[in-house]
Length: 496
Image (cartoon, rainbow, N blue to C red):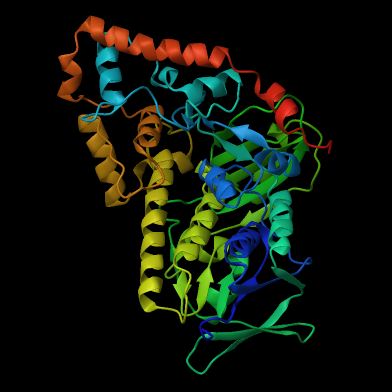
């Protein structure tokens, strides 16, 4: 890179959510030491279906000092307390994977051990009844409860979010250049030197961020970083997205509804609903998928259905030489657990933490790639769990998922939980113990034993312990306003 004291020239190739999240963070945090140019073309569309998020986005917005109510109005946002999984375990079966925690843990054992003891004694309610976020989601209620630590995320219009971040980035010195990239020029050593646009403009840089989506123009096409395909574990390879006008109050959760060859989503914004279908083209054709999706949606259709081919997997390196891939250019895991924007955010924050002061350091590159791979593999296993751990045998797709080989890391997690009721979170993995417990129980995997600490308590003590948690949850939820009322008071968006 350039000499100490000069501003580092960063070029971001591509806009959308990934490009503008990166640009906003650089502009807000490093405005005095970086010179950032983002190049994008209005003629090139973005995928733009990642409208459901997880609580980490709350932290990202806080770090950039974004006013939440202003942000929510701009993106027509609603609050999200979890995801309802319908037809995944069995047809007509439903459970919610919620944010937050369930019950109260002991330092030796998670709450699920005490719940299981209570279940054996016939005095425990369903596991989810002891989770504040889950019960609030079911009752369609919401409010900010900072003292109680209510965990939430957002449903957003991702295109509006990119526009919101663009304003923030440009207010902190980021420059936007309209145009298509026609050529990428390399130095003699193999680093990226510059991008040439179709109008002849040349953008020199020292660090390049690839946000070109599935094309992976810089990291893949130019630097030749290969791709590891995970479709043998996650066979879905197509999505179709469509927007509809809202027909009722927005619920504070995402719906994920399994069908014969995949699943479909419903994401409620304040004035419209995001709908889509994810499917495996080996088991369902495009016309059949489109027809099925359109037969299931409610409300006037606002957009033409858009087909999005994808291949689940990861780049073999996410930082190569002076190029960092962020977003779809780095890989793709289907958004079943709303991790798409989270993975963008994690890469942005990881790069900010390792931003080179002088030249690119190989140790930074290695650490960035190692951390990224570790996180991706953890999320990959969690998504595979939903498909593999099912009772469904009603279609060839589900029989394939039940019988497919899965990673050894996931086999271990499932076996550990089934035999002992234990699950552990290592090294700040995204999905904590409660997430694994909720999904494994929801998908039908029941532990055969519990920690002996739960047997220390008498039947009466267990009953009092569970009742106290249940009463607190019920009392808190009863005092919450409806989700719709809270939105109308806190962050009403302009009518669509």
